[in-house]
Image (cartoon, rainbow, N blue to C red; front, side):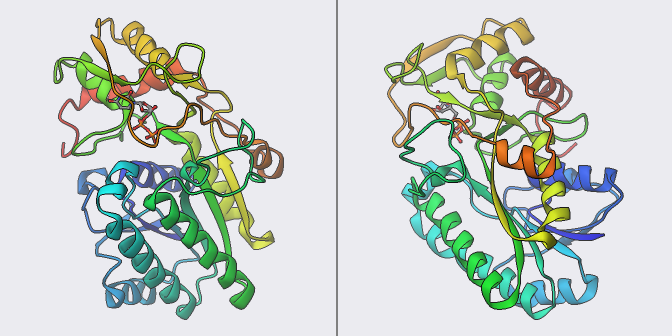
Length: 325
Ligand code: UDP
């Protein structure tokens, strides 16, 4: 099977490419290196440095490589930034995604995996959050993914375009070769590990007055390796029908628990201070992932927070300045 992976130089994309190649797939990475790193691209993948805003570049790549399916990771992904720069999300994520979809239809590609988000569920009626939960996007970012999901629904009806939307909760962890490196970094686990590396003085906890057992936000931290495997299972299944899955660990951990775990793993005191709440953060986000477990036999290999932090720590220690290396 040949797979085109947009955003295959980014964090989740590059690790999915690693897993695809381990499963024997042939991979073409399409990435503009805006947040991705060429050093993260697996050496056995074909790398095309291109932008989804450039329709001709997509057409050329699809015509040249004729993939059997597409995994689409390339997009702007920060909830906070999407409030400051909504057009980056409500225009670029969508227009770029449409360029890819239209080109895929024209080139006869009929299998598509969308990297979607828990930010579709801003006001859940029940926790854990299952696929039946009503969609309430929590930001322009969440709305951009919602619109992509809606386009896919119509392309399936019109063209028989088969897709899976995978809504991730908090992707984290690393493999031996690849890990999380954003600039600027905004995610909790890499920030905490940067404190342990001596690159930051302290971690600020965004609010300790949430309606949770210790007052700090509870999130569902899911290992990126397990996310990658879910993409591969979903791609193998879409011919049987389009689908949507919520992907998480199945249990939540508070910000305080993450910091305490990182203290144990690194042996560093990791000073913390309480800061104001970050706008838009709900108390608790936990995925109900029973559907993909039941339908596709998805198995989480690394559900343990300590193991997740250990694997991330190993990568950060080996690559304290991230990519390139
Ligand atoms: N968080 C925090 N301090 C930080 C960064 C994040 O307290 O410096 C909290 C954040 O408020 C959220 C959790 O850690 O409750 C996970 O945030 P992250 O940005 O990693 O992922 P998100 O939940 O936004 O996808």
